[in-house]
Image (cartoon, chains in turn green, cyan):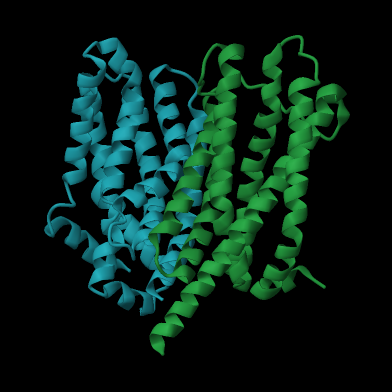
Length: 242
Length: 218
């Protein structure tokens, strides 16, 4: 039993069709409970008022936006090194989800920034790096769309993902140097000192779990779709040959 | 390699269109900016470093798709790929040729255009230094974008979408260097960062470009 078994599309399809209902229920459950708890059952924060509730969408989506890119980096590496097609298709399937997460983080951030900072947009390092990350997602998806041959597309987007990761990170620090920010520091960290109080912490944790499960659900669905599309293409080709 | 460099330079100069077009584009950008923001000297002087860097960057972008496209179409890229010199070396030479035909003229012309934008006196030296250091990185990164899109029929727009985000760090440190030079502030940090980015790009990016070309030639 190893993770490489799932490089076999058949095995992947079997396991994912078995797992899909569970993660779907989990995602819906976590999000419903977490968001309801966060929106209606937590007190208003002293400095933020009711705007603090944006945190339950803003923080999880921002975390996912970065983590999805990291996941794409890992799957691209697996494709480039071991040539497992499922891996390349998973990277392709993840990109639009990551782009939407980035967009959600940017929009909820703007909604939060308006009452707190008095502006919808500020060229703050964190905001700017997210905008740049968004551009990287767009470029990555556009390259997938532009190339017909699936293997060539997987190779080129894989290389782009590697180079893009380095430059996304570099931009993050360059932008830090370029402008001092308004954005507050990390909300969550493993040493408990800096964390927000437990009243907000538990619903937030549930929301994060919900977003992770939501991503897994969408990822499995989209990867299954990609695999089926690939099979369909192969069948059509065989038909034409015969 | 030298033969390849002279061949590319000759092609760029004689084939028309490419050489000089970047400069003209740079001039147009610089001319249009005062129409957009108004002719007051104070405003122009403040934004001049950024405009000059942006203009140089866009002019550089304009000629990127020519780096490999013509050689890909007539098959000479296949010959170069099977030639005894490694493909990474070919990419580096191509980047050098691109820099000599577009980057270097931009660097030399930038001070003249700086006059048009009322660039403050102490900034001229730093403008030339920053462009001299930064434009090689633009050319090398450009080869990566050109290599990714070389197999596509209409790759021009996609090329800009892919390459421009990669230009962010270079642009930030380059423009910051000129701005600090103009205000008489300490220039060491952006200078070193810019030089570092360029050195790293020149050293590493040709490998990525060569990998992309190999995929496209497969």
